[in-house]
Amino acid sequence: MNAERVLLPFVDGVSVEAIDYALRFSKAAQLPLVTLALIPQPMTGSVRAEHVQQAQDFLETIEARAEMHGLSIERHECFSQDAASCILDTLIQLRCQGVIFVFWNDLPCFLDLKDVQSVQRQADANVYLLHLPPKEKKVLLQTVQNVLGNFIRS
Image (cartoon, rainbow, N blue to C red; front, side, top):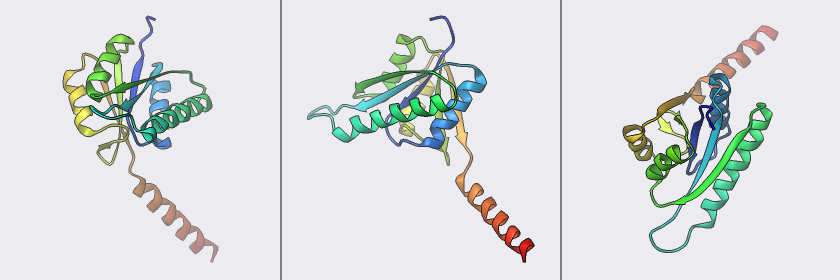
C-alpha cells in the first residue's frame, strides 16, 4: 500500500474522547488509521484475561466510532513483553509513516509515558502528539452557562 498511514497504539485505558480525537485528526489530515492493540505478555505465567478483553474493547470501540465518523480503519493486535519495541516493529512492518499519541493532562491516554518517550526517541517516522483539552474547562463553562441561564430567566 503506497498511501501514507498512521499508527494508533493501545495498551490500556479505553477513552472514547481520546479515540474520537485521534479519529478526527486522521480524517482532517487525510491519513488512514491503523490501530494496534498491544496485549502485555508477562515473562512468566499466562496473559491476563482482562488485558485481552480491554484490547478487544478498544478495537470494537474504535471500529464503531470510526464508522460514526465515516472512516475505515485497519485493526491489529499482538502480544508483547516490550510495548515500545513492538510499536517500532509495527511501524516498519505495516509501513506506517507516523504514530499518534493522545495525551490528557500531559499524560498519555493509551500507553505508559516511558513507552511513548522511547518510541519518540527511536522512531524513524512522524510522531503526532495530540493533547485533549482539559475536561475541567468544559465543566466550568457548562456551570457558568447554567448559572447565567438561571440568572437571565429569573
